[in-house]
Image (cartoon, rainbow, N blue to C red; front, side, top):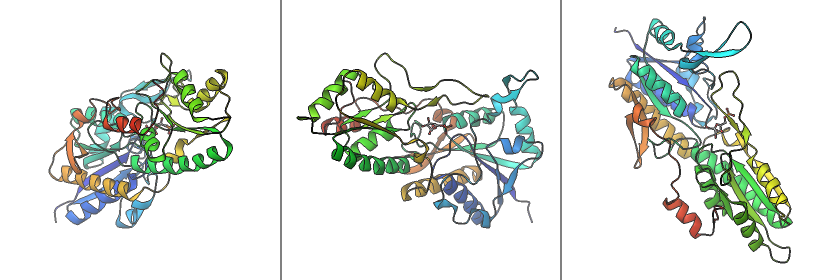
Length: 368
Ligand code: F6P
């Protein structure tokens, strides 16, 4: 009997509902094919990098039913970039080192034929670099932010929008009861997809996104218009990466131990303070949804998209079509090169049909 080829799967960067559905789909496709066995590296590439590799065989039992579960059974990290691996120096300070050759040698020594890297923009940039160094690797895109240009949608996004919309609906009724201004902050570092979809689905009066810097005077004007003799209410949805004209984003701009992320958060509170300082008479309350948008069970669409992407990743490996990434385009899952996938962000264009739709139903973007 011919020896089975080994596939290694890993999940990197922030987690996202649907990751487990991808892992299950690749495992099932491989089992049905019969010529492969599938393994997982715990905590992205860190599992392989360890002196005692932390890798697990993805048996039928291990993946059974996991497609309905949030998170990732393989765990994840955004501190394990093999090209810039965080390393502590003797004096206690931190630096980064390129350990990619060592990583590739380890993957080969462990007998892996191919790797599936499930991750966002940062992870796929790593995939491309490893591919250029000769590793048989394919990518599966992941991010709730939906900001990868090579795919119309990423799994996890629809779940995040659903969670945000449900929360928004709850805030609308309490805003109405108390005649308040409610500001709800959602994720979205560079792109306002979650905010825009939530604003349209929930019927927001104001939607503030990274792509359209806002001006406080237009927000105040909109709020004033909604109040009549002290009665009225306003619901605002704001992306964590939104900023005023000429201003900067709100958050903790420090980098810690080679952490790739600059931590955003708190723009809702900043906006509340700015509105109050500018004389806004209405009571204002803020809600920051944070990681509730990333946790929990994926909605059915995301389970389906993630499963189809997992199957596509397996097909790419079986066809020896490396350096590619699964992508959802024009209502079907196909593939694109990793190179193209990482070439640009997918941000909202101010003249896009969805922004026009929102404006037409009365949503203000705080820019006029
Ligand atoms: O990129 C996805 C994302 O959810 C962003 O929207 C958010 O800013 C970031 O991850 C949060 O990262 P972390 O979980 O590391 O705080």
